[in-house]
Length: 290
Image (tube, rainbow, N blue to C red; front, side, top):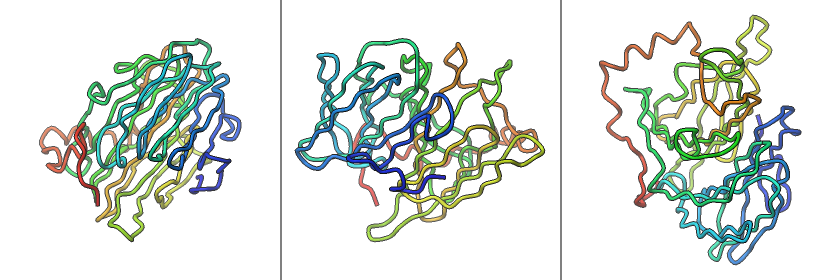
């Protein structure tokens, strides 16, 4: 569990590298720019996506410039983004200021820098009933080319559960891929209030090496090296957002999961339940936030 601000470094309010996480591939940084500011950084051995969390800006990389429209916030719309490869120097600037997530993955192959329009982000409504949630599949293997990186946004309406049933992806075997995962959270609360949510993570083996049920607030992050994870719980009154970042050692870039057998039966109940009518929470048009 990484609380908001614990790993701040210069213009980055969050820095989680593979070294800091104690694993080999997945990373996440959150860059905060004041109006008119810019930041330049090297990607090193990692490919990254520059994803506006709030505000917009310009990304310069490899002689290309990508104008990002961005959004007021993660609960207002689906955002456009830019992909930047490993071994690159990147400058992010913003006239009006903004916050940018930089999900990343250590990788071997250098791809080209590219722009990802919001209109091409596949928006999936997953689950049913109180397990209904929205998944913005902006950087999945089916939606966008990358070498190792897999990243999605999940929006869960107030009082619903997502990442349910609990699942894992910590073994390379048929039907499952080995992926380290980062959950970065934001909570939609009325102005002047601080919202909360909850995240459950526990080991898949008998030793219960991981046994976490943590309260999360905006800016908090949970690291999942292995084990079952879920549910992600949106408290009544507060919509919950999280950014998932995944990468691993497999030769195939694939997101394959295994349900906890104690709870996997829940999926079979969804066929008889409607999707929560509050979904989708966002699309490519701006909406008012709380």
